[in-house]
Picture (cartoon, rainbow, N blue to C red):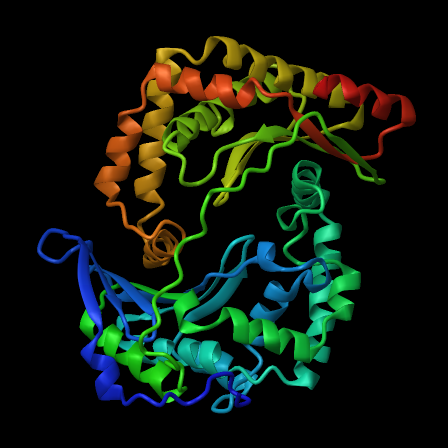
Length: 459
């Protein structure tokens, strides 16, 4: 193992090139919106979407690793590693990495989720070769030096403190714990102060070697790009790093959905001196591969997805009990969440929860009206298309689709699946999801009598 993380391959580059496979996954009009995929001999997948009408390109690398892949003692390792890959390689210092993209007006960042990590750069189309070289160098050549681990530890602890200072954000971590307990999905992506302090450079290096093999990675690029050129540049960068140790390796499959995590009726309360009480009321949702997710998306939109939604109208517009109230869904490989969030004065918590519970119960029993379903489908379709108006969103869509589903769905197919949702579909998923006994997470300055009454919301 070299300090750069990859051993030199015994295969020649000509042998590697001989077995690369390219497919057209979505055929656009005159090349516009065309999605292509090449699988390189080391198991690395390169997916692109071509849009000649724009002048930008977004390049990203998705890693098949998230916080749910951590043991309890490794809590926060995935996010820690995300930070460290920006700290320097054998070719570039941390300043070199940041200044390279700054010099061309580009943007570079990364994010860690429960089931994946993504590193990306958005640049002018003419600067795409630079973005590819820098991001690939970061992913294959990270040094992960002891001194960088020590310095970045302080930054991560500050990030944890910043999150703790925002109860509106923190309550969602609490809700994940309420639903999943000590399962990795129930732990915070950032880790905790104790786990971050316990992580060492050696443990993070081992984590890096295990999860950043090319078979675990998906390269995604969207914009005014040429698929063959992107593949050549990516292949050259990975071959230079000696990343293709086994040219016969196959890409890792998407996570399966065989396990199921289901909980009900749990309550967690954190007492804090905050101006508002922050609540999340929810229940198990659907796995991201469940065919009913289209109907659940319509249900979620109608219930709490906009200013015309039931929860917004009942809680804010009619009664003024909260400024922010909404519903949301989270889908994982084997399970999911459906939640309702509200931030309100502590004295109004029980009224807000009663209204939210009444609406959920009513929709579980009676479903939605035809008008609500039609409006929700239109809202979903419009927001989907508008959300794909930049190359960053397109890169996210194709990269996540390949990593999490192993397939690509065209925008037209997505819109058609939304339009095909029927009132019966919505009634069925509402009965299955909203008919479950909910769980509740609360952060705020609640008195003992107020906290004791919260059990009524999950009864």
